[in-house]
Length: 409
Image 1 (cartoon, rainbow, N blue to C red):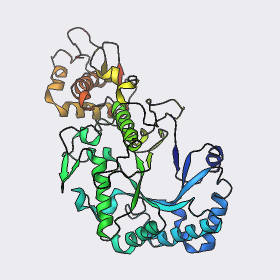
Image 2 (image 1 turned 180 degrees about the vertical axis):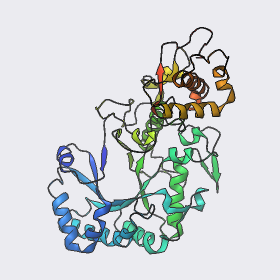
Image 3 (image 1 turned 45 degrees about the vertical axis):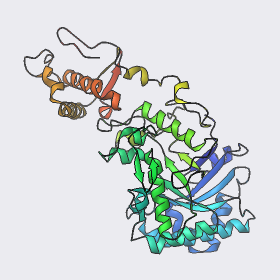
Image 4 (image 1 turned 120 degrees about the horizontal axis):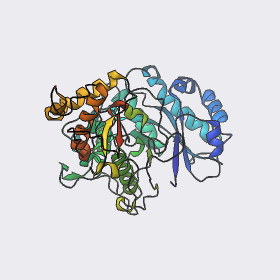
């Protein structure tokens, strides 16, 4: 896999010890819950560094300490907003006192919801509730210390919530669906999102702010409504991302060409116990058992055509000898929800399971769901359609047809 950088959401002692002498650049985060304490006094920040950084650096090549993650999202961590700047300043002073000035920089990670406006990119503006009181002094600190603003950017989420964005534009594959803004042409969604942040910073007077991508990625599986969450899409997004970022000719963005942007893919592992929609558990490059979800070279030297077909993906989405059927072990409610979703997508999908039709018998939820799931998947797989149905759908190479009920493939 050839990982060059790693980001930790907390200072895990075992992981930091394991990263010693690997050459990998390491980013360590102060958990949101500890921001107030670190911001309370220089002594508290020094104690934090002595406990969590000093035992491991420089053997573990720690290059950034992030003060929190997405604290401006929602109101959960609003009580920490006033402590963010003091915490960054205190940690910076602590790092200098240990003699690591220039080795370890201090920053924070924000989500794109710090912007009140992001389209077109030149209209990027920070939210009024944080722009003057919190963002401006933060950007001043980052600029003076030559640090980066870490921005978490997820084109998948933007694409999934907007009917106006084409999949190819979100996947670094657009040829015609480009956006032109002020003479600049955007061929992918990520560039547009990053330049919206640059534009917002410029409006506050920071024309040379450096940005790092703190999180980005694409899920390899999702619920039946998350049709773009497929192994192929995840593999292609992350492979193209790596090639773009690590191009021998630094690409940058249309508004900041030639600028290198340090980037961290979310995530290394699938989180099989994480609650929420299915995609939440499937952002990883690896399964929890360490097997790869798909092949990826993190040096950016391999092109899409040089990879072997993805397991359970490309060969199963050609429509040749593969069907999407129901998992007979799924609970009836999940099966029924999936059935209703598939039938609702196209009334033609479920005519054959109506009374007296060719696939009505056996009249069971498992049988009817299998027919509906397969019809949905066969039609939409080319556009990223999934056979997940919240875990109620499975792919098979065994023809499920019987009698006059012939499953399309």
